[in-house]
Structure formats: C-alpha cells, structure tokens
Amino acid sequence: MELFEVEIVEVELKYCERCGSLWLRPRGQSGVYCESCIPQMAEFPPVRKRAEKLPLAPSDKPEIQGWSEGEVFLCGEGGNA
Image (cartoon, rainbow, N blue to C red; front, side, top):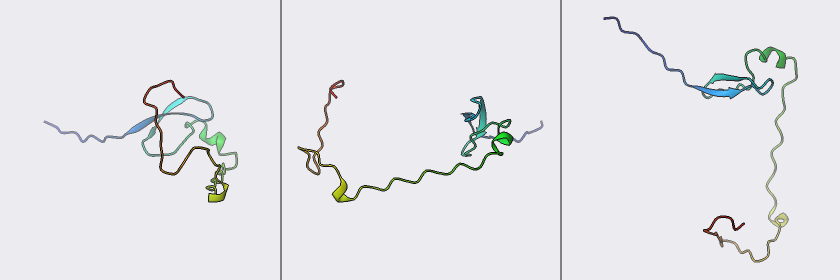
C-alpha cells in the first residue's frame, strides 16, 4: 500500500479591489488584487496610508451634561435608542 503526503493550505475568499472578481488567497496574506489585475495596478504609484488621528487632549473633550466618569447606563430593551 502506498502512502501519500498531504499538504493543507488554508485560503480565504477575497474580491479583487480593482475588478470585483472573486479569488482565493493564502490565509494571512494581504494581497487585494487578482492575478490579472496585479500587472495593471503595478503601473500606479503605491497607495499612501492615511495619517492616524491623534487622541483629543483632555481639555478638548466635549462636555456631556449629566455624565460623570465611571457611570454607564444601559437599556436592556431593544428599540429605545
């Protein structure tokens, strides 16, 4: 009896952010374009990440009337926003 080695490759279903087609990419990788769109997108400059928003300084926080630190009020019934 002959034994076979089996390799398991985990993949994710992904849509191409250029053409919208569905494709499978290896799990954990960050590719966003399908194989046919990669060469076309290589012609464009790389996308720059947006600058992160800085947290508000304590003096810049808006005041909410009736709110005190540490108090949280939750409504247990739905639909009462």
